[in-house]
Length: 393
Image 1 (cartoon, rainbow, N blue to C red):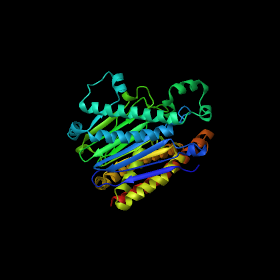
Image 2 (tube, rainbow, N blue to C red):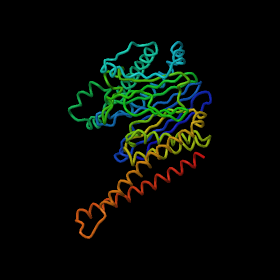
Image 3 (tube, one colour):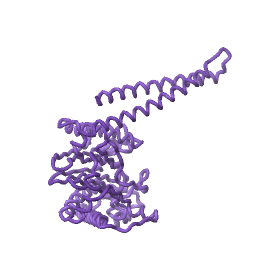
Image 4 (cartoon, helix red, strand yellow):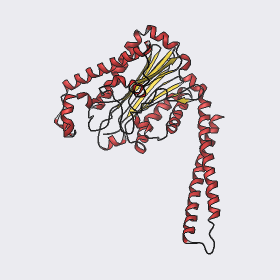
């Protein structure tokens, strides 16, 4: 099976614009396994929505590709239903400062369970609706598509009876969404993956609180019995609305290691998006082509990205985004040059003499090799820095 890739985009001048794309990961291509990520977006009537869902990849979750698709579609529908009668809550959001709310499971663990506000109650009702409708969708799918012997053969025997009693496990997935209007915005998440936002001044952050229960190959999920308490979210009025908000499945952040490396990846996309009409199409095409490549050299997992973007704000933030990249390269160059100076000092102390020991000579040669490697890194960084400074002009 070849690379599975879907890309959608909507342009709406009355709201933030949106796009989404997802692709089959390298490890899935090699074994002819379906893509278990799903992403969608919509931007119309003054409201933009972007959603990313990641089906669990283990053998216990063999219908998670279906579960992820249902989760995204159900969430879009329930979000739109909520917004039709948002009323008082919308007014509260419009006047709100940026606010983050941790999962109830986290609040309880910290002994810091706060009283629910009207906004919290509204979001909690949204999450209940999403979970209920998702269960209805997968139950209907299971009724119309009974588990096959081939599917059950992939499940360890110790799990078989549990699956027959808890079919939702076979459809398990994560869910991440962001919604923005002219006057307010909010985002919510259950599971792993990352949300990264950029302000007009170029500053970035992770707006949705992280959940420490998502660690290594463990994650919270829509199929959890206490899923309603595992949602975390953030919201704010227009003044706190980011210039761009990116949602990425864990296949993205697992490919970059340090979060700053992933931020740099999104900045590259943001710069293209903010460079004009052609830049929009170039960014989308670049993602479509580059995500499969990233999967191959990185996590090898399925990849999905969705985003809401304010093109005008991004254009204004372009210089600040470039400066962030320049400062990052400058810091790396400074560290590399310090490392080179230390190695040169060590080399001078190990300078071979006629009666030098064999160990001394070996260490000296190792240091020479290390100096060469650092110098190569410095050359690459200097080239990157020069290119960024040219962009800044």
